[in-house]
Image (tube, rainbow, N blue to C red):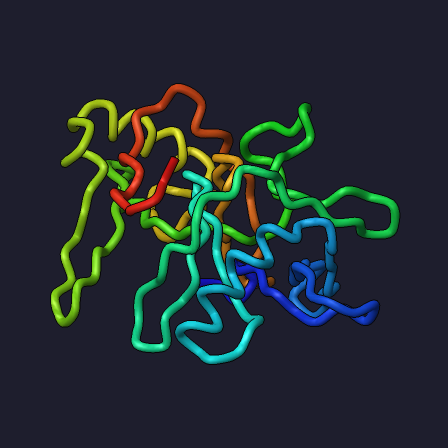
Length: 211
């Protein structure tokens, strides 16, 4: 997973705690952006952090179902709750967040954060998958297993049109928009792959407490 795929809870210079985003400007430059207007989210994450680590603060993720996931030291993640508010950050007067500009088309450079959940686009654009880890067992879960071969292929081909037929890692953020890294001889950049729209997708994880 790319190092920018997560958010973090950090101490605020003004007191209290806030949400931080590592916003990548280039391969060699980044901005540490913060937002102190999400107190409920901070409390949700810290409740889990204090239980598993003994102290508040640290990394977390938000998936496409708005589940807040806190990494566990022993591997995997702990569900902290559901958070539907969109995280936005100010970058020199410009709003940075998971929702792209309305005129951004698939194939264009992705201007948003790299925070998201990774999936793997199979070579040839035939399917999308992720690994489900339970203890020592790792099970490959394919989109075609859940929605059928044709619907899975339709979405995979749409993503592959911009990611490339070699496949590889793609990300989906909490606003259900896809983006992916593209690596060339000059470095790595990120491309926008479009929103999930009406495409068939994986079912939300079955977790206790989801509303």
